[in-house]
Length: 290
Image 1 (cartoon, rainbow, N blue to C red):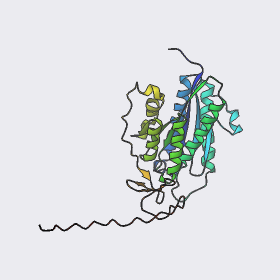
Image 2 (image 1 turned 30 degrees about the horizontal axis):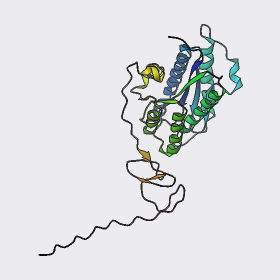
Image 3 (image 1 turned 90 degrees about the vertical axis):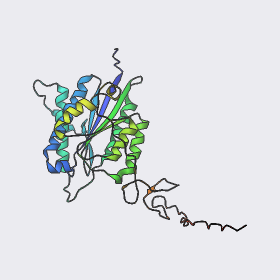
Image 4 (image 1 turned 45 degrees about the vertical axis):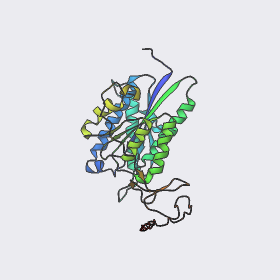
């Protein structure tokens, strides 16, 4: 097989570091385990091909920041570990230093806060779009996003989710999701829309094995492997009034907002609708005797 040096592969890894996640509240060591597994996965991707590249993004409850490549110049003086490839040392230590700085600077919260998952996908798409604009003419960049999260479903970010899902589909960016704790319906929809892989992790102890087995191969190569069977995608929408997934609802004919109950005024675009008249049953005609 001929090796095309003008083709490269980029993986943007999004790590949900929100301490409000149930899996982290039960055992804070799970975040360290996810971090170590993510670094090994990133180095395995770089080892596959010299042209491959990675980026890492931390998603917190108050901010979204790049862990690698680092915008912070303080990580440039990282010393190489004896016997380890210099690039691997740079990736691993840069990610860990930046994540520690982000977690230590995070404000304390008294209640559970949502992770900014949809915003982190948008930031990853912007980063990919910039690299695609800057790439040399004639070269090809195959980009995909991998998200590691144990958060609950965030229906309040429904519109942002849909925007980033269809933007990724338009940019030919595949979205992969590894759910560490709870099943996430909206992210499952995003994987199906972009042609990615969604996996609800059976146990956190085997995280690294699942990352290398399911998510390390590119989407074209996965068809040749035996991967976990795809689950049925739940395409329910979230209502704009209560931010809950619904089976049947009302849709605004102007802005396509979804509501679980009828409202004479759309709260999104303020369009006024006529109140539907009650359904009346027609009186049956009396039969006339011949």
